[in-house]
Length: 230
Image (cartoon, rainbow, N blue to C red; front, side):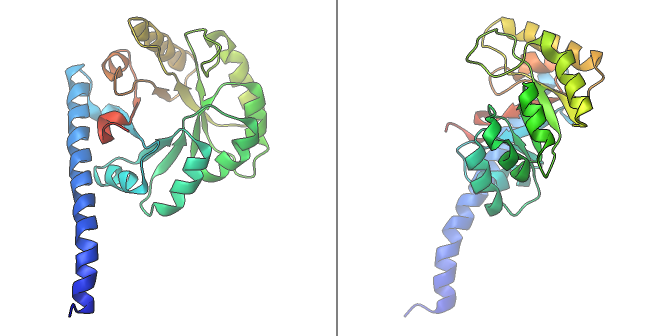
């Protein structure tokens, strides 16, 4: 007969081992990301890494925390709302996805920062939420209508409206198109951050973090580079 204590050990140990393996893998991948940052001539201490946990489970958030990361990013409002209650480690939760105005109040309740604001009506909706969170304004340099983000020339008007509504704009964010134009987009975003006296320049992901770091990013968003293929 198996004693109760033995039975518990048999059920817990495999899960614990799997979680330890995941934490080890994420810590190793984070070390590789930091090596890539160093290769650009930047210090990893000057660049925050947001762990993008889209489609990954709470155990991946815990592994990111164990590796020393403090911020996670989610792309879907419903996934963020479902996942966060199951994470018992202190993390800052960013929302990275495109915004639907009817989901903004929900996002303000479950996220700590919305990184993808690009329209005046989104600002106005955030201003009416019972929990008002800080934001980044997302800028798009491609001109493609299917991509989220404001044009750079719209930025002064967005900042002015945010100030009127007393919304805390922490910085700017962009997702660059693949290819040689990425460096120019990153350069222009960094210049805008400096011109308007903002704090955060959020640009660069697994594929293009070197170009972003070279152009002055101080926050990169990494999913596959930390956790592997989805």
